[in-house]
Length: 380
Image: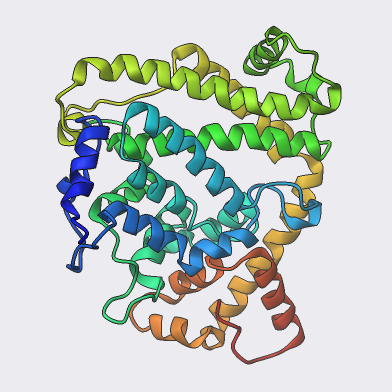
């Protein structure tokens, strides 16, 4: 017979005192019986993994759209990469890997189609009703829009998992005072570590940047020096892959070194103590400055690259026309979204409908409105 108490015993042996232990969860909005062999956060992870919104991440581009090739990251591949980095950090710091993975898998679930362009367009379209935040929309998805259970809407995730995503939706407020759980903090850090390195990889592979251009940046020079110091001669065609590996390893190593030093004197603290005392982990000042320099460079040289801007404008025009068409004729929304308009403003519901689309689904609905004068669009 399976005894779930052994799950708590295992966590007690393996996790640091300041990790979020499953036994301390505040539970779920809708009470449920405990599972016979899975803890609450591993159940959250599985619910997110099996949600339809998570699967749709495969059809949402990270930065570049599908018109620019198929090598570059989708939201799904990026999410798995973030989860991998975050789990590694959590394991070394002896934090709760199940909660960490659940948070990582959920962190981008609210992203609209067409990468950053889609978010910018929806923010403009919804300016009069509070704008659009993919982090906030992720909560709407897992609390309201996912329909996986007969007795309640949403996924009924643990309060700690929901609170972690709420931190992402209110980053400015979370940066001062009471600190988020350490698991929440490291997912946010793993996200930036992953997308910095992988945007470099995608841009190099697509020919938007060269190694020579990147080598002007301190963190890239540091990474290239580490490759050289390894002693083996790297062929030029493998420099890109080696650079991406070193960028990730450099940042993770720096973060872990500082975090271990910060947390070592706190043995015996509980997760609540860490939060109430505002304890945060972060990169060293040197690496933080170098990361900032890299991100500023990527913003100007990649995200604003002429090739990308042309594609962004075209995608943004399609999304904006869809919004305007539906705002003028909300009866063209799919049935469940028309019903949702009875309790929420039409612009907000239209934004939710569009934000849930994949890139190709959005293109298909755009072609539909161009070819048909009336009739509802398809549900995703």
